[in-house]
Length: 278
Image (tube, rainbow, N blue to C red):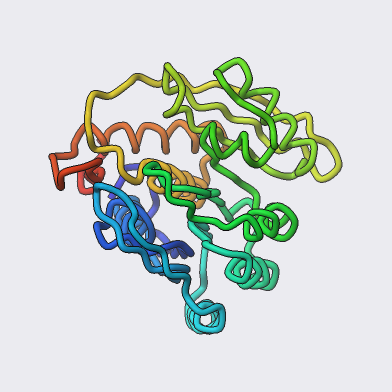
């Protein structure tokens, strides 16, 4: 268990995301992150994928009816502390997840969205109709979003070619969703620095901004870094960390899991989630 989390009450986190059979990303990777933080993880699968460390070959969305029944079944049985949302595939899945979140009673600050739009290998993982529904139905419900630079550009319909463009693009997103905490992961930048813009409030977008410096790690274990970061961020928020501390801890978790990883597969391998932070 990652140091710093209390054992006084068993926290339970739900991941709503796709299934990666190589377990580098998706629900199985999220569950590893939760376990490393001493959190019990639940999972609702939004889509099956045919993929390995070498890329995604096929995506098959889950029936919306099955997904909703799964979510309701879990919520009827277990007190869910927080929710991480990942791959959603299409508009019907987005609508099911949005409806569940709206009825869950879980505070927005305990809901983290990793807006997965396409895979690193170029496979589209969220259809255009689903992206539109994400903007209109889902983003107003969650308290946190963790786009990378490419996803931020798509969400804001604004090019984000470099580090200096990130704050302005984040401000544009905040202007539309002022209650949203925005963390832009910088893995695609020359220096892998992350950027945080905290929520300004329900009616204003003037949140606090901060950069988190990072160092490029020489490794092929980069599969699922976005999934791991968003799940670790949720874990730290559930532990009671304030925004800046939660982001810093999540970034450190991903960095250490990358450093600890051993080569698996012939492509971009998974992180190692079994180490302990001292």
